[in-house]
Amino acid sequence: MSKIKHFVRQSWLLIVASFCFGLLIAIANAAWSPIIEQNKIDKLNSLMSGLLSKAQRFEMEAELEIKSAKGKKVKSNIYKAISDANTCVGWAFNCEGPGFQDKIELVVAVDKDFERITGFSVLASNETPGFGDKIKLPYYRNQFEGAPAEKLQLVKTGDVEKIDSEIVAISGATVSSEAVVEIINNSIIQIKDQMKGKGLIGNGK
Amino acid sequence: MANEADTAGRYKQTLLAGLWRENPVFRLLLGMCPTLAVTAALKPALTMGLCVIFVMLCSNIVVSLMRNLLKPHLRILMFTLTIATFVTIADLFLKAFQPRMSEILGPYVPLIIVNCIIICRAEACASKNALSLSIIDALGMGVGFTLTLCVLAGIREILSTGAIWEVAILPAGFVPWAAMRMPVGAFITLGLLLGLVNAASKKKT
View 1: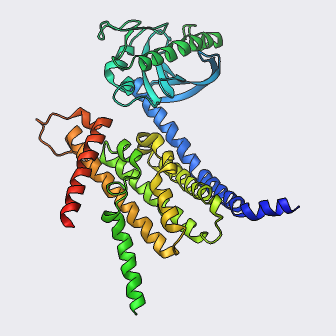
View 2: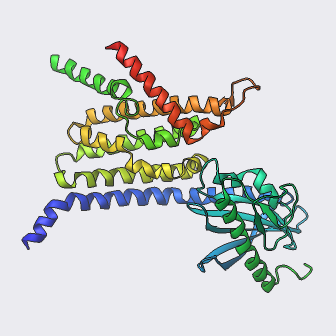
């Protein structure tokens, strides 16, 4: 009994303070989380419009589950890009995977038949400034614009201008360049198969 | 009467101490991690400074209010708990209303929790002094820290991009020093400024 008394006497302030602080954080979170969510959606929309210039609006079409390289299941949202004339002009989806020091989250856009990649953007990453974060620069990203939507290959040297399934790595940032290619490779094939299975693509629609 | 003048003098001393005599960055060499990491441009540096002022003010107030209830062996735990609460709130606030800044600052906002300036002020000032003096101390130290960050960031932003507050001010022929944006620029600028401050304060005495 005296042990409990001792414990309470020593730590009551800590317990009370934890409770009050927890409440404070909960209130702040409840008040601002809708705005934070909205910010994320706005950012995703603006990134997707940058990748699919013809698109007027985006509709979430499906929520797929893909396996990461390590076998972990990751959710991927598929967005359908719709033009002024109400036709499908492409697809965009998000995917993620391990980068050099932290997770890299990407949004990838493909054309309406899922044949060519129209580009990718980095949604969130924590790569080394000045090296790994060059995956956000046009030099590297432009190589994906128009590349075939199939297995891509990373090469150390090659022609950056030539658009094909060979992606030239950023010098000094091989791991980050490789990570992006792997994330895209891993997700694009699985998503293509699953979308074909659902009849979203590949039936002349 | 004399007592009142004394108190006012003490407040003034405390406020000025943070700005120059005990400037957290130049004189105490505390909080080096954010100083080096977020001073590549003025905007993130100012945002970081304001966050630190907010957190320090709140934590000093709370710690000062509960200073008589603190158990000596649990005090650091209480400080960290208090600081972590306000940092989390500041982080949520940035994510909701300044999403771009939140992205640039990345992990450095949560890292304010372990910023030694704030723990130092809680330990050295707030846990021993009355509420009013703790508030003045937090303001002095916080503004001192922010100003220092802004000086560093201003110098680095001008030299690395030719702009300040993202407005170009140097002539178009200026070749940006890319190194200033990288960690090496932070170390060199900080080192030179520390030398200057030391030289200046030596002359005075």
